[in-house]
Length: 319
Ligand SMILES: NC(=O)c1ccc[n+]([C@@H]2O[C@H](COP(=O)([O-])OP(=O)(O)OC[C@H]3O[C@@H](n4cnc5c(N)ncnc54)[C@H](OP(=O)(O)O)[C@@H]3O)[C@@H](O)[C@H]2O)c1
Image 1 (spheres, rainbow, N blue to C red):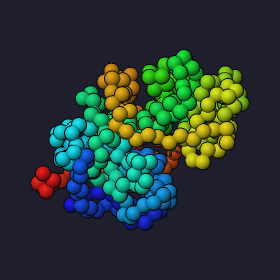
Image 2 (image 1 turned 90 degrees about the horizontal axis):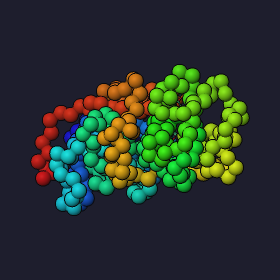
Image 3 (image 1 turned 90 degrees about the vertical axis):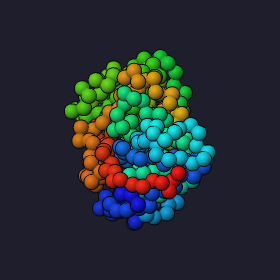
C-alpha cells in the first residue's frame, strides 16, 4: 500500500482524505513512477466538486507530476528504471474517463507516451508545474494558427496557463507584441516574464485598449468582453467551458509527452521557465491548504506539492 489523497464523494476540499491505496502494477506500455512532486490545476478541484464525466470513486486527484521510473511493463521501451520523467498523467480524451489514481500519491502508473525526460537543470518541483499549463498554452496557439510576427493579447497572464502562454508567445512563437492582463500587484511580475505591455484590469477596461491584436487568448473565461481587442476575424480562444462568447472558440489540451520533449531545449536554455507560486511548495500533508490557495483564483503561476513523502516500499512484486 502507499499514501495518497483521495475523495469518496464529490464536494468541497474537505471531502479530501489522506490514507492508504494499493500500489498499482504497470501493464504493457505503462511505467510505475515514484512521484517526487505534483502540481495542482483548476480541473482537479472542478472534478472534485462535480463529476464532469464518467468516474469511478474513490478518486486520487492530480494530473501533473514529476518523478522517477521504478518499474515498467514489458512493452514499455522508451524509458528505463531510474529515469527522471514528468508529465500530465490524465489523458481524458483518449481514455474516455478519469484515471482513478491521480498524481497526489507516492506512486502512479502511466502510459509512457504521456511523459518526457525531465531536463537535468529543472527540479522535480519545476517539472511537475509545467505539463497541463504548457500543453494548454500550445493547444491555444496551434488552434489559432498563430504565425511568427503576429501579436497576441493574453487575458489572465499571471495564472498557470497565462504564464506559460506569455513565455511561449515570446520565446517559441516569436510574437511581435505580447500584451497580458493582470491586477496591479502582478504587473511587474508579467513584465519580468517578458510581456511587452501589461494591462492592469483594475484600472483599464478592454474597450480602452487602443491596439487590436492578431490573436486573443482568454485563459479566464472573459471572452464575452475581451473579444473587443481582437482584430476583425482574428481568432479568439477561450479555454474555459462553456465560452462566454459564441465568437470565441474553445480549445482543450492535447495530453502528450511529445509536446514537452519539443520544449526541452527551451527549458534547458532557460528561455522557458517554470513559474511557481510564492506559497509553494506545499508539503504532501498540506494538500488541503494548497487547494484552498488555488481555489482563491489568485495563484501566481503554479501551486506545487513537494516533497511527496515516500516511506520505504517493497516493489519486488513489480519485477
Ligand atoms: N481547456 C483546457 O484544456 C484547460 C486547461 C487548463 C486550464 N483550463 C482552465 O483555464 C482556467 C485558467 O487555468 P489556470 O491554471 O491558468 O488558473 P489559475 O492558475 O488558477 O489562474 C489564476 C490567475 O488568474 C488570474 N485572474 C483571475 N481573474 C482575472 C481577471 N479578471 N483578469 C486577469 N487575470 C485574472 C489571477 O491573477 P490576478 O490575481 O491578477 O487576478 C491569477 O494569477 C481555469 O478555468 C481552468 O480550468 C482549461
